[in-house]
Length: 166
Image (tube, rainbow, N blue to C red; front, side, top):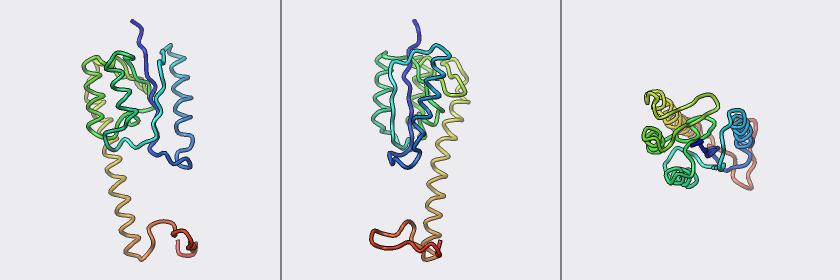
């Protein structure tokens, strides 16, 4: 049986001026990669939500459909597009180890059920640590701004940002 894939592209925010080209760039590279390698894409899933917490509806729908047999592979930019939290990472790893997912193709690697699980676990661990560090560093920066008496963001509507204080 030929492998059929779901393409999954994700960016962390739905704010349009942040990561504006992220989804389009992922789709262009991954569709080209699939064509070069003869991978059949059944459907593309696009999500504009952080993967820091479990519960992304599009991701969950994709995994449920894989479990039903609608596809047996995933194409994504990097593993961190699939998960940045240990719960979602474990689901992906479990499906791969059990052969529910037969192949994950990223822009630079292949993952198969027979692979050593340490590398995938390590990559998902890095993705999780990145989001934890980002949170701690952001909080630290906001606390330091407050200690200096600075407003932690842009001025509220009706007020003016003074560029001399930045």
